[in-house]
Image (tube, rainbow, N blue to C red):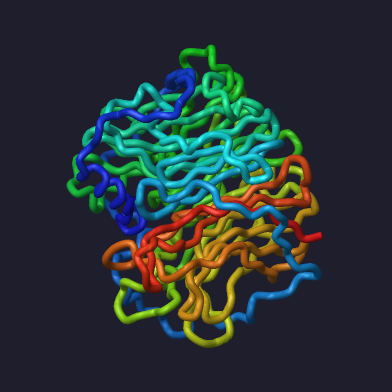
Length: 529
């Protein structure tokens, strides 16, 4: 599926323009139970709808000038006392069954199984890499969806506090959008009758026109689950410039995980409530996936970019006198620039051989409650080694204070290498406090590949390892090639020194030559001991 409002909504536009088949799938042994969402308090009435283009979304041109001196050279990223290791088995996850792009690889590891998902399919694998059942189409999981909707943007997390997998995905018709949150208790990987689905409209704010929900992000604390979406105006054809606001939807696990509850109360924040501290509209607010302790405060992160500088924004959902409140603070920042288009192996002239490294929006956030630290990441322009600029991973460590204004960035660093472009990072810590980053990488002498890096406690430099090399140059369609949109990484709940990573790589499409239009999800476990 191609999404590029630049990197936002064009996939949905392309999807809605395609003929829609009948809504039928095979391979489901029993339908999951369904409950629906109900607003438990009024949403913010906000103000008039906006047609302002979000500041983090770049123009679709490869000619992005970098002001002289705005990106100082940094040393090559290396270091760390130990080197990361890929543990057996590394295996292929969900394949490119629908022949769509980008792959959007995501997943998480539970006690006995991986739940993996890609663009429009999901599947469970045991720790040896054996598939539990054939991959299921996402839209087949929610029997409340209208016939013919297009599904997209899955996100998977594992809730170690309650031993549940969570899978969220979006879907849309030409006039309506939906969000489906699938709840899968540990041990029911092969019994879909024990799953339940929270079915909700993608537009939870009334009386402001029809909105389309895009790019859902998912996080949780010990007692709540929170998802966020970017909202676009359906009345703007072809949606260009139609971004309206970020929508935040939060609910208690007690109702969400109880499949017998017909209506799950949700709290919605939107419109003026999700504006940045300076009054500009936030774009892509990322809830943290939490681990350790018993946190009840949901933190989230975003970037506020004004064209030459950016600021990291910390958001907080916290119950105050029994009422859930949303607050935010700017943690400051500095010079930033959109990452350059990525290079690929067999690099040729023009944009067909380049790959999309993203925009200046965060792609992953993680809270290590035991350490009392939050981590978040994205890709942006950097310069490693003094040569041509690269797309590099930038990550931040944040100390979130109980007095939100006293929160501070305690550490930050980069992951990358001279002459290569890296992007689509996901971030998490292991039980020893090491920071792990999972990402895609390529360059003129290197095909798109899956990598992971580790940062030792207190350090800022990283050591990286190849997970899976690519077959050849990825060429799915005209123009810059869509690749990823995100990856995923999670801590092993059985062995906190081990991490599970979910990425993708180009595979041989059987048509000969050195180029391919197929990708394959890859799943790996990693350690640094």
